Length: 488
Image (tube, rainbow, N blue to C red):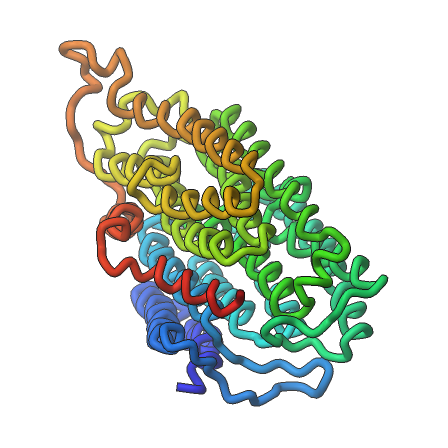
């Protein structure tokens, strides 16, 4: 069991090497090998769930490289929680990609990079030190850049260049924060409760980390790379960027606030207040900008900005219930936004349509895809009893407990904006006026013509958005509550 954290990280890299060596010319073998690596990594992370439930920390404590650059793989509750979510989403992304790529180019490169991306993002959450986290952050960012520019057209190259530049800025900021942190504490590992007390230099370190992790998360005003990267990337990559990769920035903030610096040190310079207000602006600005977009993937990208704002808000409030809401929203958003981006990709593959204004009556052309979109969109808005309502409810209760009642208004306004930019898509897909007229040629039920793997991986994510609201015990809520209780 104690080898599992390292195995979870290493398995995708090993299978990526197998792909390069043994499957270069056989596409069927390429798909089998890629999916096998992803599935094994998911299973090795899922096997650790009982350790999360019992409060165990898994890992050998073995260090790779010498101090202070030592890296060890260990898994506590929060590591396992993130790892299971990320590896599950990658597994479905592989299944979707087999159909999405079709007769496209660069399949070997794509599958190898996807496996390496899965390994690197799992390395972020399994590395039990700031240096290890930083190392895998940078590896993940470089691999993501190549995936973003996969199409190799002008739009992809522009988006990739912007993403790469912002990644370099984030890396430099985090590295500066690491240097100051090591100077202050003489160590870079994670310790429950933190070990760096308030001092004049704490502000410099935390400000650097705010830039670095804020860029990774797509937080205002550092979100400018995100609306270009999502539309340019292949649909499965967009789903992973939004559902998983931006969450690593939130993970970094949690580790920073609760495992490196003490809460008192964080509060001494008002870091929590700064993060809270940036979160509020991120929520409202992301929602407002999403409302203005006609390109579907761009609207979903700005929606991701707003949704990461909810997560950062829960982290910034520094309370058990707020963190629980943030963690559950990380889980819910991975499913919801993953499903929505996969739907957008399926629409583009079958119809070539990218703009919402072109999608009138598309619910009759692609009923399964658009029903999946509808389920995910309704969940995203936060209508009870679906997943997003549960996370927003906990955030609202935490806001009331802390006396910050204005945050409840922020949550309500943002949910209304969510409805304004999601519901018209659904209405036009099924109930547009010209579609509903008697004898309309558009009002004929057809079937989704995209490959079955694309349809059913999307449908599974959408069903899970709803299913977890009715399955008892609601294990994601239970696990989020356990993690929050341990931290606080």
